[in-house]
Image (cartoon, rainbow, N blue to C red; front, side, top):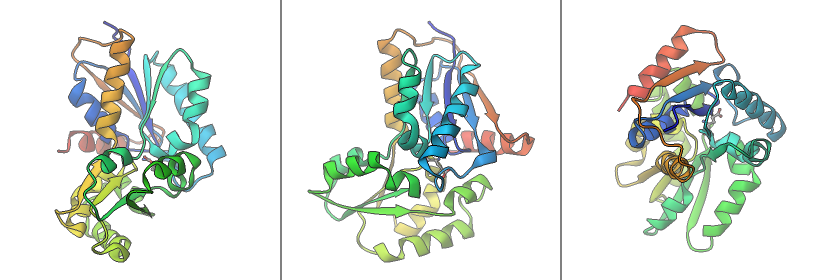
Length: 253
Ligand code: DGL
């Protein structure tokens, strides 16, 4: 038994989609979450800046004596995961990634769209992942500027989100069989995305895989906890309304 918390961070509220999955398969674990809402979005920034932000975020989480770190931000994983693993060789470090393998394993023809931030889609890490599968299926990179901001305003399921998504997906009519939600903010917009794409297009994300990997690594290291599980939410914005939104998003079904 190890009561120390798992530290989780994202550029804002998006990483809470991963926390939901971690909580659902590891309900006994304590979690400390940091949302860097004062600097959201991460997706339009340079790799250098993101590395700097990620290191700061982790330094903050480490003040809570964390036993594992989950980078619940695809963008920060692309920019910083290698450096974080190198900087903290004694800590379990897990990074969420677009669930392209999962989409490929279920591929039935058509095409796979990968929605993610511009930063994730242009980084080498994603290119390498994509080239593992793009010989045998059609993969479309779909950046979705503006969607993260709508989630942060609590408008993931709003008419604004729907109209942004209609425009975004217009060029892909009839071309998509599955869509990977490669940014942790996007599962909050899943209802609007499904309304636009239709129920025949499967939506997949990396939250469950990340939670399973967290469980596997903790079990392997003998660090699983058997307690009641507490989630502490923290944010770089000193504003109670952001924590309120985070709690609401975390409990949303
Ligand atoms: N939620 C983040 C991700 O998974 C990034 C969103 C952003 O700040 O641009 O990529």
